[in-house]
Each structure stands twice: as C-alpha cells, then as structure tokens.
Length: 452
Ligand SMILES: Nc1nc2c(ncn2[C@@H]2O[C@H](COP(=O)(O)OP(=O)(O)OP(=O)(O)O)[C@@H](O)[C@H]2O)c(=O)[nH]1
Image 1: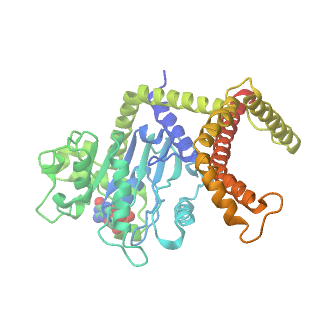
Image 2: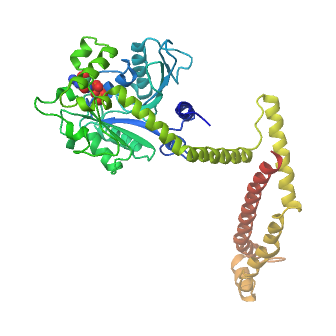
Image 3: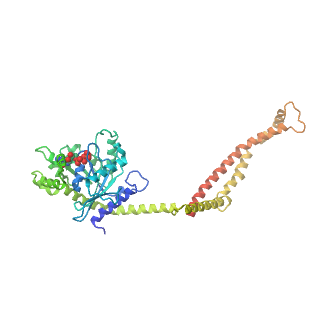
C-alpha cells in the first residue's frame, strides 16, 4: 500500500507524463487522464496576492513579477520534500537534468519558456510549464498557478485576453477533481472578489474551495475580517485561512522569506483580533492543510484513476494491435515490408476477382443481367422499322442513285444504333469501376488484417 507521501509523488509523475504526451485536458480524441487527477488550482484577481501566496508556501522568490498579465501559461508547481540539510533546487520538465539552485534563474526560465510558446505577443497559452521544487522546507504538494482574472487588457495585449483568461481558468476550476484555492484580498469587498464569484459558480456548496484572505495587514484601522475567517460571513466547507504576505515595500527592501514568515507568525500571534486563531492562520499552515487535503482526495479517487489508466491501456493496446507490428526502421527492411504488403494485396484482389472470395461475381452480373436488360429497353423496334429504314435510306443518298447498296443509309442506321448503345455501355463501365474500387478497399482492409 502506498504511503500518503508517495501518493502525491505518484500523481506528480503521472501529471508530468500527461504533459509529455500532450494531455493537458480540453478537447482531445484520447481519454484525458489529466482531467481525472486531483490538483490544487490557484485562482484570484490581478494583484490579489497569488504569487505572494505561492512564494510563501515554497519559501522562495521565484515567480516573474511585473505589471500587466505576467502569468500567461499555467504553471504546474510540484513541491517535493527532501531530507533536512539537502540543497534546494528547481527542475523544469522541459529542461530535464538541469538543476536550478539560483531561484532568480528559475524566474527567468519561467519568463523565457512562456515567451517561447506565446512569442512576445503577450498572448496566453493553455500548455502548462512544469516546475518541480525539491526542498526540505516544503510539504509535498502540487499547485497550479493560472493567469490572474482581469477586467482590462493592458497595452500590447489583445482585447480578447480578458475572456481567454476566464475561459482558461474556468476550464480548470469546473473539473470536479479541482481543489480551488480562491485568493481574495481582505482590503477589498469580498462580495466583488473575482475568485469567490467564480468558485461559487462552479462549486456552490463550497466543498472543494479553500478561501484565502490576503492583505489582512492592509485593512482599515478599526475593521477586521473575523466574520469571514470564523466562517460566518462567507461560509465554505473548509475553514478560511488568513495570510500576511510581504508588502511591496518589503520586496523592495529584499526582506527574505524566512523573515517574512516570522513576521506573519508574529502578526497573528500578537493580533488582538486574530490571536485566538493564530495556529490556523498563515502560509505555512495553509501549505500543510492543502497537502493533507490533496492526499485524502487522491486516496479517495485512486480507484477511479486506476480504472481509467487500465481502460486507457486496454484501448491503446487494442489500437496498437489493429495498427499491426512495428514498421522496420532500415530502408531495406521497409522495402521488404512494402513488397510483402503489395504481394499480399495482389493475391487477395485476384481471389476477389477470380473466385475464392466474394465480389467478382457481381462484375459478371453487370454483363449478364444489367447490360442485356438495358439493351432490351432500347427502341430498336422503332429505329429498325421498315418505315424508318425507308426514310433514312431515301434521305441519305440524296439525288445520287445507289449502285449496289444504299451505303450512306446503312451507315446512318448503324451510327444511330451505336448511339443508343452508348448509355447502357457507359453505365456498365461505371458499375464495374465502382465494384472494382469496392474490391480494392476490401482487399486493402483484408491485407492489413491478414498480413501484419
Ligand atoms: N501588505 C501586504 N501586501 C501584499 C500582501 N499580499 C500581496 N501584497 C502585495 O500586493 C502586490 C500584488 O501581489 P502579488 O502577489 O504580485 O499578486 P498577484 O495576484 O500574483 O498579482 P498578478 O500576478 O499581477 O495577478 C505586491 O506588491 C505584494 O507585495 C499582503 O498580505 N500584505
């Protein structure tokens, strides 16, 4: 039986395999495993504090910063807890074996990899970037960071980006396996929070939504968010978690994460409003709660995931066996395979025509039944009636007396008769052509099945 920790690690590996195989949900003809995997998705409006929460959970500065829409591709962030004393590093799925120990280079690589997919056009792309972080200071957890919900495009970004982001975010949060981390700043009216509006829509019972209130330190003096944090104002099934991230000034002053986490702990411990909730607040607590919840969701979904994988294996194996044995790689062997196929096709096609397999008899039927029946319907009685022959013959030679036989007249009679033949003859050719094409199709199908 897998331990709790290895469950998340296993799902991480499956997620990476999905990305390599081009499965990131959405419209696809193949069964999508990606959509069946539970994941924590970070959702929030612009500047709500998403990046700060993620960095705080990781304990490192590594996300791109800037104005406008910075996150333009989903970032699948897989956190792996390592043993105490080991060096922290990041590793991207698209750059395997390259260990990033300098986290400012991680930030740069996220930016560069985003641009590689979207160009400098500032468009968004649904193809995720996978980043694994190995550190003794994290819990095993997978989080997906998405572009912030926004109302307006900034310069250089197409107007459609506002809708495109909403569609992308929705495509994640709609999935029943998605755990929504809804980030809302406390210094804003929660009723207008983009994250809460969206999560209420897709998860009305609040079963899979974790509400996170950031910027508690920025609330107006004399106000607090205790009604929300104690679950009275906006009740969810899981308790709300309050967070205090670094302010812009702290970031400018290069306040590091360790100091920032300590400051956050102190804020809650010394707060007259939140002191009684201190043990259930803060980014470290949030990471632990999420990790535990993710593990329990994975455990519950495990039978479903296993049966989906088994079903996919069966379907793909059936398709593989239908496609036949693998094609040889070197030119000589490929030529041999092609000749072998041609010979097999030739034999099967001949059997269809000459007998042994059905089909050839239908061609015979065209000449034996269809053509004679059509000929019988031709108006030869009228064409070769004595009256018509007399008329054609006398008209044909004009004033010239015919010496032996009325040659011109006969010619006209024969030409006319041949014209009548043309229709049924062409119909017979078409019918035979159609039958032959059908036999070719059948022979190809039988060649594939028989000889491969
Ligand atoms: N004082 C204070 N400032 C915060 C807090 N959380 C975030 N900020 C500041 O708010 C600003 C926006 O935070 P980000 O974490 O970049 O927000 P975001 O949601 O990732 O923003 P976008 O990536 O632009 O969508 C930054 O200047 C942060 O320093 C907080 O809890 N307290």
